Figure (spheres, one colour):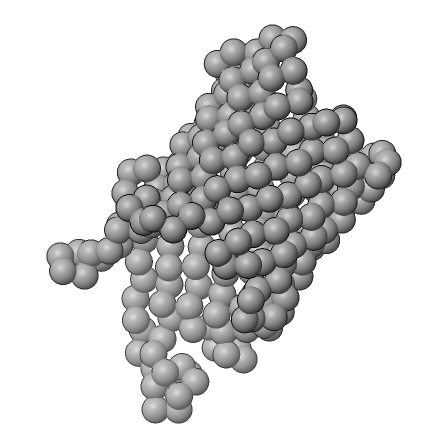
Length: 238
């Protein structure tokens, strides 16, 4: 196993005032499993004035509970430190340059997941975000962050093609979001990915180019109202 490094970003919905970035690194530990570290940031800005910044630092750990030639079962736990800097108020000028500092909020959340596979053809997994019911604010302003349940299955009819379907639901809510996708390896250099989502309806596609231990990925994601989001990322295996 190798160390995986990935970094990328783009403007959400193609809007220059909503830049987002991320990087992550995953490293295997002999016998103990895998450890990963990730960081992501989203800004809202007006010219040179930053109106708000959201940052999340994540540390994850995963381990195989069982693995043989026919099947495997793994679990993982992720801790997230989320910080929201509210920047400054609009002020008299209206652009935030002469406003007052609105402070910041911080919270820690935990995510938990389980994944299993059979004969390298069938996979299923369950992932729960914010299992500790992390919240922001105090007293009457206290707000519990959403808890999400994700469950999905993947089928690989051939080694170069994988098809997946998944559902996502906010715990305590009745509405369900359905997602489907596929990934096809054209050859040893090019992978093609496509996906759809219902509620709301969105479509995504992307291409990954691999060369030796490096990769470049481009993807786009539509929105029923807002413009398309374009993202690029770079990957490296050490």
